[in-house]
Image (cartoon, rainbow over all chains, first blue to last red; front, side, top):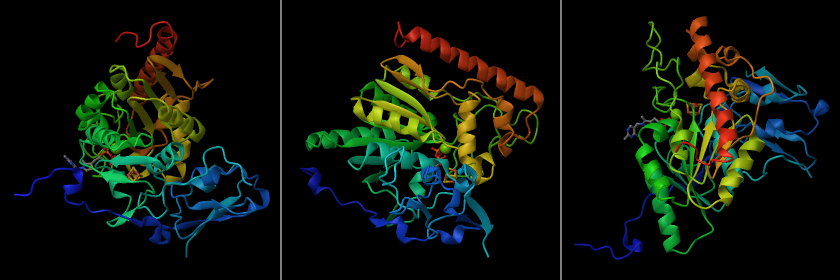
Length: 91
Length: 304
Ligand SMILES: Cc1ncc(C[n+]2csc(CCOP(=O)(O)OP(=O)(O)O)c2C)c(N)n1
Ligand code: SF4
Ligand SMILES: [Mg+2]
């Protein structure tokens, strides 16, 4: 019978190590947020409130929506105080 | 360089499969921003055990243990003991569990963990029902709510019991630090988790996490609801450090609970009479909290 002397003797466990970002969730969208930075004050509320981490900030400090992972929940458009983001129907 | 009011580092990948507008998704994102990369997370059965995606995918950039529904408190105790045995002292151990996994099935393991004052953080993300299995009531579901097991199709078939107070229960263990947070207030959220991280012993965070399909509202309103819950005093923000209560947000003019209840389909059957009753209960709980804040300054852990 096998005896276990240290934790190193224990059988291995399956490890999930493929980052979920390799999966696109773009197909979930029925509406798409479209950002016009004209009135943007760089408050980053859209970045802060995105549950999908799908808004980044580029080198010039503008928020950028990454459509590969945006699910179209509409939180960014609702929370932007300057109404820079509008939701448009996906076609 | 852009300036952010919460840490910039992302420890949650995109591409997870939580519903659009998931409050729990923001909670884990903010929690890990505050705790940083030297963290191990234990997740029991709940939405966030699933939302990382099918094996072999993971949505977290930190090591994660997927564990059984009732074992969050026990598993983080074991992780802590193992890290201590290996001499790895600088790693934060955190359990990320739902309200069902915390207030119902996991309460024994949680109680044991806090009673031993295990050096770990227990984080309860509260969407007020068993969402992953299809919106069944939990003891953290609020009074009056519709769920699939409290169908509200006849008088008295809604949830007739009040929401269990997990904060009162953990404070009764004389826990060093416990706090409530809402995803609607990320700066307050991150500050409290950072505070928790800096303290030794058991720590508990109770996070208010609106859930669009479970609460029956449109996903763009997640943040609005997360704020309204606080601004109506339905979910007060406070912390308890060494038995001393401190309310961290006092709405100068609390909104009527009707505003909060009216935005969610799970409360649409409520009569004016029931709404008045909920208002009364909310006011009472708030006044109790104010009293606790005053009294506990001189009498930490008062009444316990
Ligand atoms: C012992 C056991 N009983 C039942 C289940 C089925 N189950 C998995 S997740 C879940 C609901 C979890 O609810 P909660 O903890 O509130 O997390 P949420 O899904 O709402 O995020 C249930 C009942 C299980 N996995 N294990
Ligand atoms: S059911 Fe609710 S808590 Fe679960 S993933 Fe969806 S929004 Fe999040
Ligand atoms: Mg739940």
